[in-house]
Length: 306
Figure 1 (cartoon, rainbow, N blue to C red):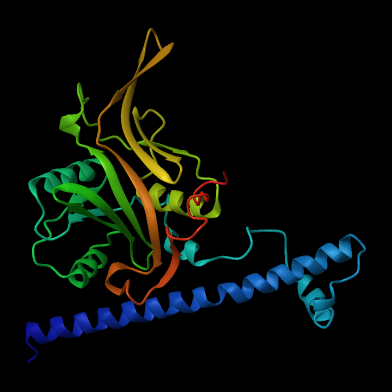
Figure 2: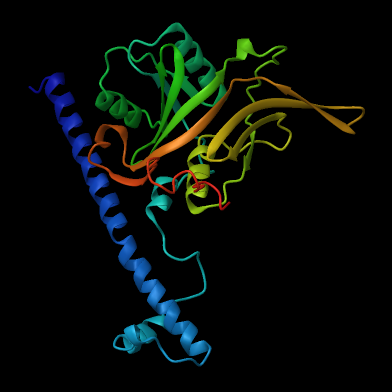
């Protein structure tokens, strides 16, 4: 007779095999993106040359006939080539996200309080004590409970200084530094924390990387109702993202709007995006990394086109 321990071992082994298979399929689809994108660009060049009655570029003349025949099967529908981003956020807006918030090991009382306030920011969020759990155990537990995003806050000498956002089950994982953190209880005349789904305001996320970061932050929140009186703002200035949290009410018979900050408030700065989850971050591809010691680093703005 098979014991329950052997049954649990078999089920766990099958789950690990399934996760590994899904991960391989995701990586394979991602590896095909560059090839498909290059083919689409060559087709577009040939189509533009034929439509404008111009000579076909010399580097495309050998394969021009084959590409022209394949153009007959391309339609006008859709938005072009699908990417790994479509796999990452396929259920965004359809199902509400499920957030897990935790801390680094041996957190101070201030970091614990900050984690509690972060849990109140995100609807459908839960907070977990880190304890002695390994990162692999945490990620596997989150996957088993259908958690969509894992948030980890770090500190330095009692001050929150880091935020990691890991999207499950495939990634990406975004790394931010935190600065100028002000807790809720440090804000004078702080308002009550509403549990309504918030409206989101994103300012100055114009570049391709900026839109990528905007999606990572946006999909942490469910779709709000029209009558929600809660507003969360992500304002980018010089690649520093200011986080502000307000509730509002209408006064003077709806002629004016009165804002009230409910906190917390802090500044975020992106320094890395990994195409993977936290347990395999060392081997995952790096989508983007901040290089502050380059000569042109001070002049460039990565999240905006300025």
